Image 1 (cartoon, rainbow, N blue to C red):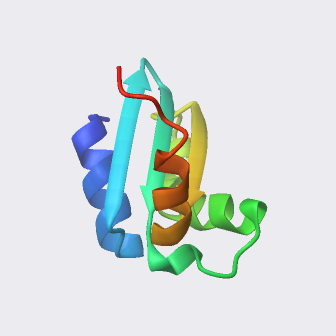
Image 2 (image 1 turned 30 degrees about the horizontal axis):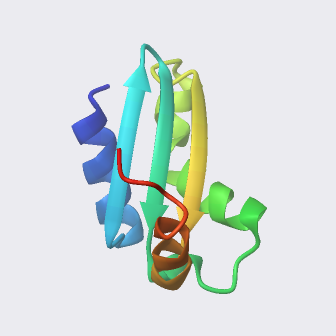
Amino acid sequence: METSQVEILLRDELQLEHIQVKANGSHYEVIAVGECFDGLSRVKKQQLVYGPLMETISDGTIHAVSIRAFTPTEWKREQKFILPQ
């Protein structure tokens, strides 16, 4: 599955403001930003992202997913810790 397909799927299902997906074979890294994560624990945020991906995880298309999910406010705060490269 192409990273762009994962991005579209998650953006559409979760109404995300920002999404980044990187892939290395069947291992994916996802950064998701949206109001849908407001008030949720880290585990609940990850479960929300896993939901739309379950079919592709079940059929083996996606083997592993690393998820970092943020509200827009959390994402702005996170950006302060990322140094320009």
